[in-house]
Length: 87
Image (cartoon, rainbow, N blue to C red; front, side, top):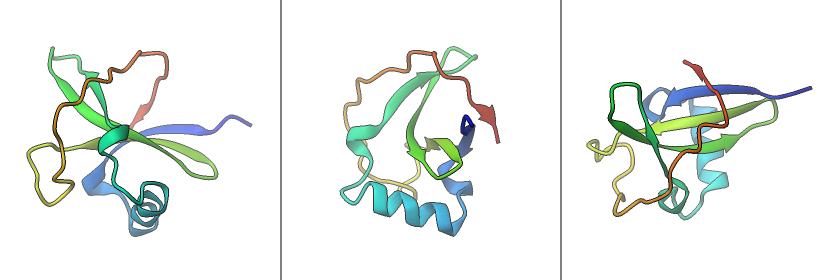
């Protein structure tokens, strides 16, 4: 069975998923961030997180120091091959 793919904001992650982020990325997600274009001609940053039954594309707010405050030059780009459901 294929895993469900979900697009979600970091700020809306439940505590259990936040714990999975800490376990999966003990040194932070900085090196795993991807710059993804949006429909308005802008972009956002996100990282993937795989759980047992879901693959999350987690949007990160660069302007919020309370979410994750280590964003420097990020040059990875999204290929557009995967489609995620908005959440």
